Length: 506
Image (cartoon, rainbow, N blue to C red; front, side, top):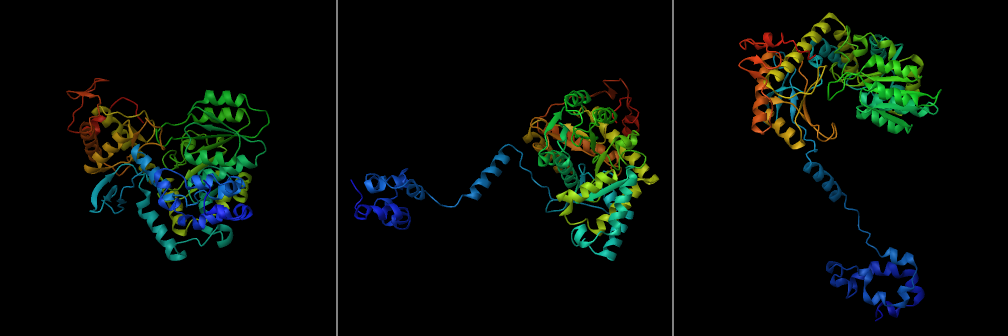
């Protein structure tokens, strides 16, 4: 049956204006206004319209214009995304934690609305330099002299003398001709790798499977062809490089200290293999600078291999207690990145207090006091590892300062972290996407200002948290004797006794 409304109109009118007509006046139609859609139907399928020869012969454009043009439901989409992350426990909850810097308070923090005092175990301010009087004084003096902000990019607002002093100090630290500072090490890695791999003709990238997201992002942004070699596996790297075209520019990219496992790369072997096949080495020392080597330059300095690293990247935001990142390398390479990397060119420069604080911190950790802090730091790391061992609590093998305790399952690791927080110990649960699903963990980073008593309290709380959440673990001690080496302990002085344990843990 033809539509009594549309049927009264001329064929030319319907073809030219039918779509607009239906949009504007469709609500007056006795059929469409009764809610065909609410009955699971589409108003464009109205029997009157479909049976009208004028409409059925109308151009396709007319019927397309009739479809629903209501706005996309953005909030519904975002709600679904967040709900999915909450269901699989990968939703990130930011703890309300304010770290304290006062003498006698560090490494404690105020947590929650009631400002409850907790001990912090997961900060990357590894040596407590963020609250060191020398670093604080340098930052305060810079604010008083130059203000709190840089005022813009280095090109537009001006290149401060403090920036050049800091870059010269970084270059000296890593035994390189030049250095360049960035707003963060994520930006340093991303900007440097995306720029170099893009501009080097035919560049091929070889990336460690365990590399940080910043390096992965830089490689992706370069759009250069890439090969992934197994984590810290020189043999696999050699195999991939042996299949590469001769004379082609290549970048081999890896970290020294892995942030989530504590593993340390076979630096010399990997650099030698890279250079054998004509590749440049890009080595991330983010979790090593300040902590290893006589002057705190990282694993490269500790092992006497700085000359084998072509480009080193580091951070000012972890052991140096400030914020920002950097690269160091040859003068021409650094100048190329400075001149071509958008992530550097179009970013506001680091502010005066950060520049001054970072410079003071690097010099501090290169001094004898820095060596003392590093020694104390390693002692606390060793004591925590041995205490976990004796308590029978699990830990992933780590030869660095990072102490990972596996708790499989995003829900379970979150529950253990909550239990620890209730007992006055803050450590963040680590899950996807920071680590692969099924490899969830707690990541402890004890520092030189933690004490043996704090560690004893932590291990006791962690034991209770495992029991509370029905997580099984092996009891390591039996009647005060180590089951693995039969060493007896006088537990009245656990620190001294445990430090004698023969097992190599650090």
